[in-house]
Length: 275
Image 1 (cartoon, rainbow, N blue to C red):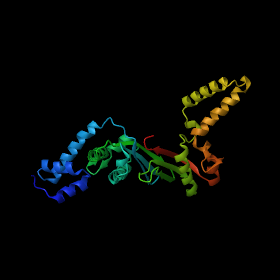
Image 2: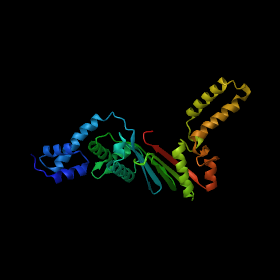
Image 3: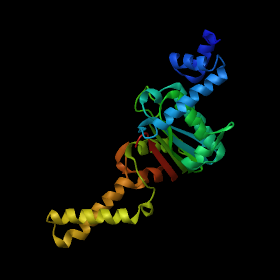
Image 4: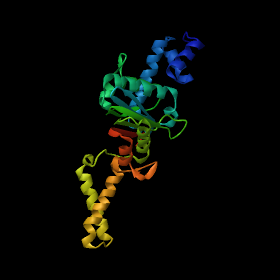
C-alpha cells in the first residue's frame, strides 16, 4: 500500500472536496505524494469535463460588485442546485468576479482570459469543474457604467445563492428609490431604457401582429390606426423601463417615480440564472 496517512487523505479531501474512495485511489496511484495526487484527480476530472461538454447548465448564481464608475455582474452556471448552493461554487463565483473586474473584462470571452494567479479564469473553472464533477460555465458578463449604482441580488430559495441580479447605474441622490427601481426591474424584466433602443424590426413585427388581430376582431376601418397605435404603445410599456407601471404603485409610471425623486437611470442589466 502507498505510504500516506489518514491526515493526508483528510487534507486532500478538504483541499479539493473530492470523495473518500476517489481520493484514496488517487493517493495510491501517486505513491502517497499529495501534489501528484492532485494532478491525478484533476486529470481524471478533465476527462470528465470533456464528457460533460454537452450537458445543460440551468442552475448557478448571480454575483455583482461595484468598482469606481463601473459595476460588473456575472452569471456562473452549473448543472444542479446541489453544487450551486455549495461553499466551493459560491467561492468560485466570487473569485471569478474579482478576476474579471481586475482584468477590466466586459464580455465572457474576455472574462475567461482574465488571470487568476498563474492560471486563467477558464483554467480555474475547468479545474473546479473537475473537482465538483459538473459542467461549469461563465455564461454571462456585463458592465454597467454610472455615477452611482443600485445593486439588487435576489434569492428565490433561501438555500441557494442569488438567482436574480440587477445593476442600475444612475445619477441623483435618492439611493432608496434607486434600490426600489432595481427591485422593480428584477420583477418586471424590462428590456430597454428608451424606445429608440427597441429594434425597429421588433416594433414592425408587433405592429403587423396587432393590426392582424384588430382586423380579425372586426374593428371599424376608420378606427384601426388609433387602435393599432394604442396596442403598439402597450408593447413599449411592457419592454421599456420608464414606461412601465411601478411595481410598488401601479398608478405611477417609472418615469414619474424617477422625475419625482430626481433620478436619471444611465443604464441597467438584469440577469436571471438559466433565463
